[in-house]
Length: 186
Image 1 (cartoon, rainbow, N blue to C red):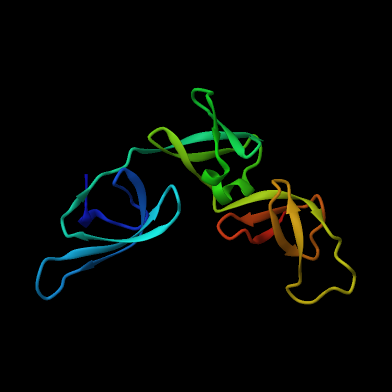
Image 2: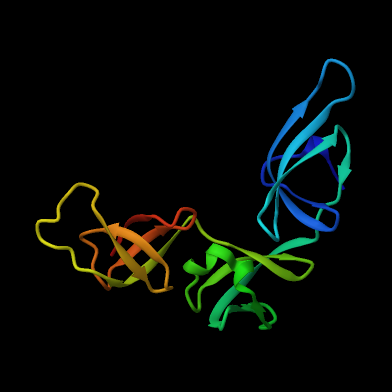
């Protein structure tokens, strides 16, 4: 059990059998009455943010969560197939569970999967990944306006905007949180 005095951003708790992550919290001590804690919680299944108030000292359950190294094998229709590196067991994970992380997963790459009661509920990505540009229009001579960009498709199928000097076959660094171009890799 986790007490409200142990709350911090990023802490995972369980309410009504569902895992939540604390996005924001604030302790309040009104002039009269008992203290309480206001929180903003993100449902780890749906991603929805909800407000919840707890009495000070109240205890909540800690969810049965774990992270496990898993390898992304391939996409099977709408599902992503991941393999547990310890038991070599393969599991299909729905695209809505992977969400935006799917655009950064390369076949054969290993990432940390977030498991709740033995089921994958998300993928923890590094802050940035290196991906190859598979399709983009060539930069036209004379198109040299500062910060000019053009659309590009990466090897995972993700579409982002890149500077005009980026060509097909270039490897670029992409921010996984904002899907923005960070730089060219050699």
